[in-house]
Amino acid sequence: MIRPALELYWPPVPGELAIYDTRDGRYHVLNPSAAVIWSAIAAETPVARIAADLAARFGIAVDVMQADVDAFVANALQLGLLVDA
Image (tube, rainbow, N blue to C red; front, top):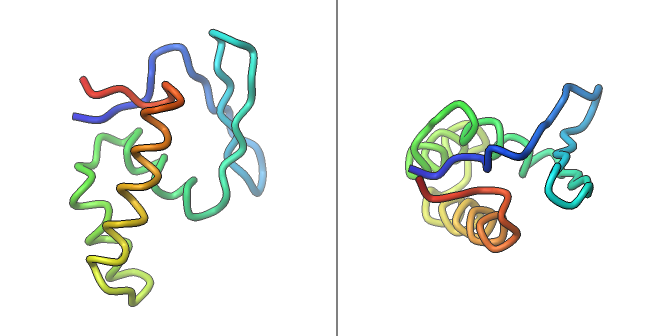
């Protein structure tokens, strides 16, 4: 199960999602698409379901959306924002 690292905070900010990493004091501001993916992961939604839900919501092919979700997850894992628990 992929989940946000414990050292992160993402307080509500109108119009955007900014993640604060207490390990290095950095903020990561997500674009609207990434914010939707992040919020779903934080709500413990399985990654495969996130792609299917977003594909249906936006009328995009599931395989295209899955590639986008997978790219976001891979990048967030590399940055240590997400962990594979």
